[in-house]
Image (tube, rainbow, N blue to C red; front, side):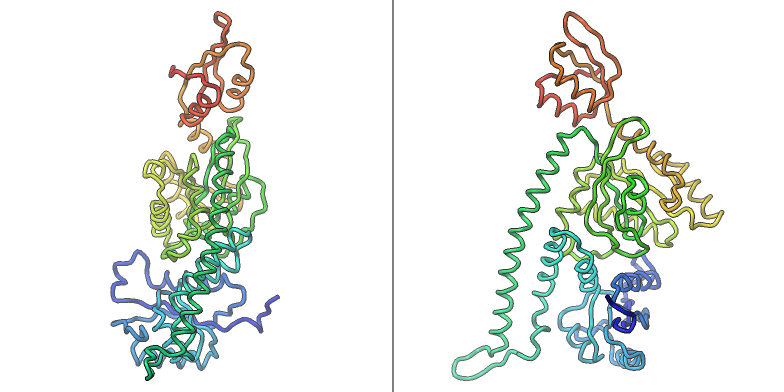
Length: 434
């Protein structure tokens, strides 16, 4: 178990680049998020943090000579062992900064990969993180083998031993990546089979999405009575969890808690976790959980929608999503009233506190009504002897009326388009709109 004495002394820096005014967040907010990311690793001790202006990014070191001297002094005085740069560094910049600062340097991508590596709790999660890690490391072998620099020798040897070692290491990584990809293909096939089984089951799927630390897992636990890890910490949970819930209207639904999103999510992770995040694509309804206490809540919401669009979620589904303004218990009276007024102006938004339970019953009612609104009224004529088809309709749909006509059972149901197609495919009967 890590102790405070064993924690790595860390300096977090957010570089303010020339185009920062076009960004959706302030440098202070970006620095605060970067510190939060660093704190999500339990063995880091944040001893210093700063947002540093970079007027002209240097290809070799990012920072200019004068700024580098200032940072070097902070590193020395605070006995910093790790410097985290909240941005993307090239392999050359990372190597040169480590030499200049005499400390380990990690950029934003590397930091998030470290967090995901520490949190992955399932075999699938471990494979996905390892794949992303290796893809990231592959581009940085020049930094990993600085003791074997490429040399130009005589006697027909164009490259030196460093090139040979790097190439051998790259081949080892490529071979490992191929093995991981094969295992992940099996995971994807298994997940696809699970989705097909769920489609056969008569339960709609509700996906909880949101920026990391928005309170999704706390809300999931409140709704389902589960004990998914929920902490005031970025990326507290990574692996998706699914539970069935009895809705107020007497129907059931499956709730899915997904990994939290974040701005500038590394492309390696989006690719690696695509199979997990694609659970959202199979959902019947998206519930977007927002942390309204955070001053950057609008920018965070935009980032979530951006990632969902990148995954291929259609605009119609995003437009029909329910927005949950969470953490109302932490707001003062004026701010709470402002968000309640905002929710009142919309049909698909409401205020809750996942922590205290405020608004949860209303949320479940809204979810149930939204799912029901996606259904249509239809009539089916069944032979009275076909008890299996009749039982399926009672399990899946909302049976509104039944009548016996000429030896057949005429049944009126409220049913979704997807379930209507499943019924026809399974039993061969057509449903007709009423």
